[in-house]
Image (cartoon, rainbow, N blue to C red):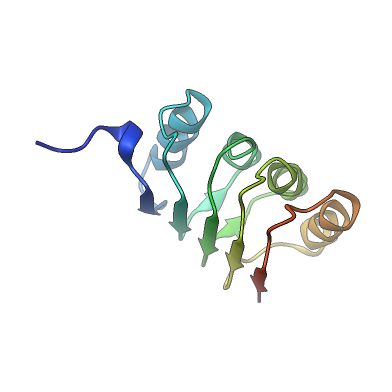
Length: 125
C-alpha cells in the first residue's frame, strides 16, 4: 500500500490544476505533512494564503519555479513564511514572475525579517 501522507518527505506539484493550491494549503495548515522536507511547486499562482501556510513547516528545500507571485500581500506572506521556516536551507525562485510592487514588497520583507540561519542558497531570476 501507499505510505501515509504524514510520511511524505518530497512533494512536487504542478499548481495549474484547479484546487491544487487549496488542497496543499489545507494539508500544511492541518499539520498533515509533518515529514515534508522538499517542496517543489511549479506553474502556479502563489497566493498569500498558501505561502502563509508554509510558516512553521520543516521544509529544508523550497522550489517555487515558473510561478507567479500573485500580489504584494503574497510577497509579504512569503517573507513572513521564510522567517518561520527554521530548517530552510535552499530557496529556488527561478522563473518566478511578479509585478514591481510585489518585488519591492518581497525585497522589503526579506531585508526586514531574520532569514533562517541555515539558509545557504537563494536563487532568484
